Length: 333
Image (cartoon, rainbow, N blue to C red; front, top):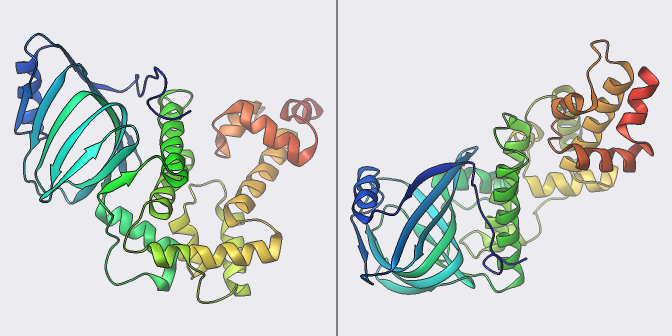
């Protein structure tokens, strides 16, 4: 389902601000250095601001709405060295940024530089947003490309076409992550799951939205699979499957870019490195279900190995072993 096509709530468990008082909202947002000015254009309109936000690893995911009204806002110049991706979920408007005018709607978003001031005229507007620190984007790009990484950090086109297949894919991915963080992952303290969601979102943004590294990201790696890369990554997976293993961690120990490593794993095992990691964790979960001396249950063992959603764990477990986790557990009992 496209964002904005249905009445969907986002991040309801992570409220930052809720107010119908324009002056209170101005003061709070100014204190956070988020805006310089905020004005209500229609005198009798229904101003009802709601902002929700949650950390996703090194990123921050937000949802904001201002009610059934038209507003104008201006953000200040800042030393915040980050980008901010805006994916509208309702309404639309116009934005002035870096000397250019942009239209935003449920079919067109944007990636803005948070250091540069912005002026926006928004009508009945709501959006999902993601704060993307530039060093984190650059680090993830290096993880994907390895030695093929250009000397310049990736720079994005400001306007985002959300009505294309790549745009819809990023929207759907962000929608999935926002819903997952709200439920069932509310209050989840599991770095394996959260880091994998961060990696998923960063990879989608870099691969799907035009940027200065798009040519390298969408091209073929310069070298084919090298067997010792596979062995290093494979041995690391087996030794540390119980910990958070991200793309960055894996390629660091493999000694090559992710795309090269992925091709090598596909050649060696018929699956990607992360699929191999999942298979190892499933095997470890199987052994725990069969042999755990502490009497841990299915949910506890699934969580231990990074599977936060019990139903999804049961499905992929059954695909790999031909039985449900509960059936394996009964053998132990």
